[in-house]
Length: 219
Ligand code: E4P
Image (cartoon, rainbow, N blue to C red; front, side):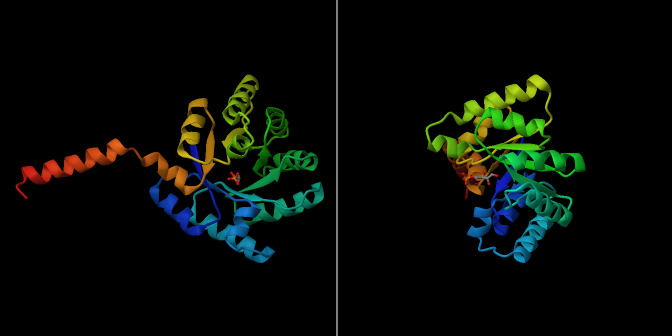
């Protein structure tokens, strides 16, 4: 399973990269705004800075909602660095843009996926990644993991190479459940990644080992 971090915060990206387990980064306009990154030039600079930290897979989202605008923005983003994956929303012009970028060999991540039909359409259009938003589905009481299972089944039925990027991850359990289903990638906050480390028996066990070692050494 690939691990992406879902943030525009450079320090958190560095921390995850330093752990040695990071495969990429996803951002969105809300995450950029949260870091106070505004204006075209600053946004572009920020994407460049992210690309300098990680090895590959930096999802950068277009703001336009019409085909021509998405193409123009996406091409500009893709030209920044080979690591950029253009993030396109699941709307009608977005589907056209996915096909356009696929034909041009520019990688895409289709965002805001909330149904299996949307994922199927994005795969048909040649998206490299589809991003079902788990946490937001949970928020409305929908079956987010069931959606990931359905997408897995559909992609396997037809051999689609589009990768399932489980997004809007809120906790470590989400990550484990997605791994059990066979999601190709997960993107979540640093806290959900670090949460995988944690088990009280590990902490207690380590404390006991260290105490026994100290006792045996007569310290
Ligand atoms: C995915 O690419 C999105 O940036 C993200 O996962 C959205 O998550 P949220 O629902 O926590 O905002």
